[in-house]
Image (cartoon, rainbow, N blue to C red; front, top):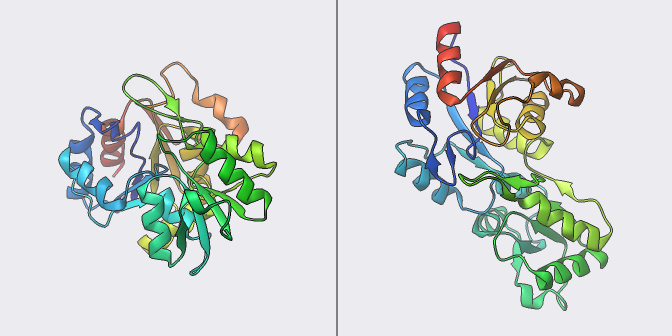
Length: 265
């Protein structure tokens, strides 16, 4: 088998809250040594791309030019010159600026015209942010979410994720958001553009079938489920069939995925 692109989720696959999962850095190095292109595809929109690259470098994984975030996908859904109320972290603000759109400060949200509200994971979410965002949507702004993951994996267990935040705003505004990240089309477009297309034998590695598994289906590639994140050992992969997720390999971690790919080639 020729080398294929390997798309890796970060949280729950490479690390947990930036604490590396055993064997992940070595697995990535081995895959690259054998010619596989490894791309990091994360729904975490909070950090900038450079911050993600530095964090990966700190755990022994060079990643410059190989990181795709849901903030980049979200930015594909706005146009240059549009005014965007950002309910997210620096990664969203960076992507909006690179797109040529304008970030509207929260303290101007009640009086300024706003074309879109973009929501991502952030730790300073509160009632006032929800009120301003929902008010802008009720006045006609589009509601865009970088992702809809309800939880975010950490070494101490899951915490509320970006999907929980956008659910609060969507409920208050009375609308359904447009979702940009995995498993949706905007993220798939960013990945295909970066790679110049994607072969069917490429592999998406992820710990969340409802996100990573469905993203593999969106891309038309294979899905490797790892049990190092939110999907614990003991949950049968057959349980995901009803959601249209085909699991091509079900293993403990990224190191096991690397062994599977190397042995199959």
